[in-house]
Length: 338
Image (cartoon, rainbow, N blue to C red; front, side, top):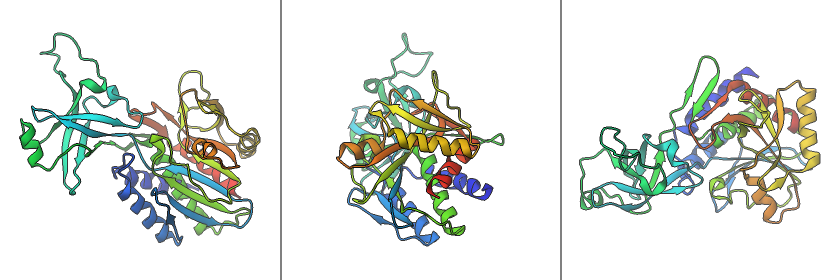
């Protein structure tokens, strides 16, 4: 299995290098489609942009879903001093982005770099610390501009996308550090699973379809799935933190989140497989979490639904996981589809 874990880590680096805040995912979609086609699959897309790929099998259809959209921001307005006032995309936490490098994407294809800062970041100037909330945040462009008119001349306008620097690092000790491990780490795991199924000629005893959604961070990525779906499993991030059993080295199986309990029998099946395979796992409850498959259930689909993922610490922050968490998640999925 090691070659597939190595492949997953390389795919993570590729995916995190592609800016894809919700609503700006075309380049990430193209990358996923090209990668799956290179493996020999025939992916399709729906109008929302979700990438859909059947791995094989015939009966009892199962969908595995990860999302490739991320948190980000958008230009809300251009200030008179030439700085950009942002508005958040998804559940972005501004204190975690204070001081972060970023890119601004214009509608005519230009890209500018900048930095996210609060309105008075200098400790040698500020009388009182500024609260790092959206109304006090701004983007300073790495351009010689000091007026609104000069910014407009660059082609920047309201509605342009702002993407934070992912800063992806994998340490020799196996730690994976990056923005947007939620959910590009699990999307990479699904690509690794597709490669494994193709190369190892895995016999699938049920029809397995991968869906890479593009609007999860704004709440409706999983609202449309194949009509024949029986079971759907969101492969997203597992939470690590206070009052939770999961660590970064484990696969997390979610029993309940803010949308209520996941299918009891499906969670039992997943945990039994993890136990039989000797995988390191935890069953946990995430009080402030929502997933693609909950959107699917709310859309009226008659399915069983579940949620798993590698343990990720500091969600919606500069996040951290571990290669062992990736391995445990990958091996659980490989066993589940077989």
